[in-house]
Length: 402
Image 1 (cartoon, rainbow, N blue to C red):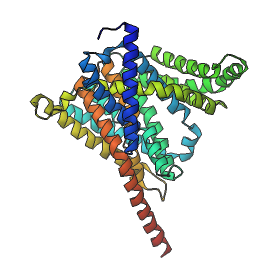
Image 2 (cartoon, rainbow, N blue to C red):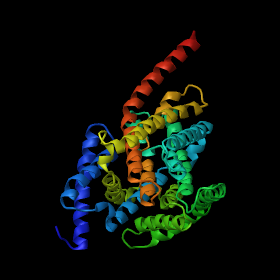
Image 3 (cartoon, rainbow, N blue to C red):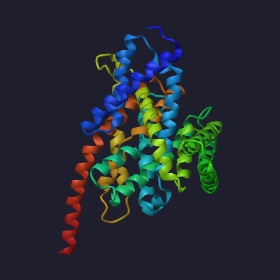
Image 4 (cartoon, one colour):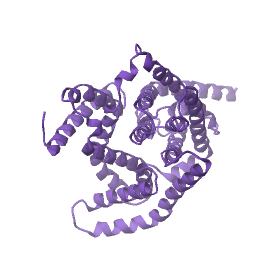
């Protein structure tokens, strides 16, 4: 099929959005996050429609741009939904859970990767991808279970966001130019922390004045445009500082979450994100090479073995994160299970690693598989964990009364 470049891009977008929404709806109906359906959609559209048309969608520049905007908006939304004061209220438990939930998966993931013969930088990157915890997927599951108001939920969500901040700092270190040295790690870590703190310290007092001016203007959509420009500006600054653009997008969300326009901005940005974010997840699926998972191919058995071990590491080390809970009458097993899904941030790590040639297509497929499996198993495990936690709490009450 020979089409003009613009017509071609429009056709690709139509196919991607139709598949994304169809499979997202299917995932929703079977009790799974829509993101899993969108990943499956990407794998299927690549192996059916695009293969039949001999299309290399993974290298299509218009699609890559839309996917990049989608991931920027995704992190912007996460930042908008994050409450810094709430994190401070959950206190030491969230911080300790986050630190254990980052240090454990990172260290074990790194040594496992080295054991499988991967290069140091690749091993560090794979360890970094295992540190993430999906705020969105865990929050959705807790909401479905009507447990968002529990102490466990507050600790999980607070720790998940801290996980993502620490993970973004690790990402900035690993994707930086040159070899990984103590100097580079220190420099990039300080730069990332300084950027986030600087954005908050400067942005929180300045942003209300910007939006006060925007509200006086009569142009249609000016508030939405102002918020989007603010997000893109910080993403651009982050990129110029050799940090990931998503670090800037997340910082922009954190800043605007403190303004009186937060709810209005969130409401206006969501429809734009609903269009662009699925494109990102479908593009993640499109990049997965299914032949890597062929168990009859001797060359891919090492990849499959690595995937199996990393899934175990991803689950077990996040369960250990529950040991960071210091509050009484809070279920550690519930907190540990709630930290398991890697979700959106894990996929972002995988995509950045592939596009920057830090990891190979095989290692990329392994990371995506780990993200999918940990995301898939969390909702049922969290239901079981709350039941077990409830029985344990009942036993504690009974023993204290006696």
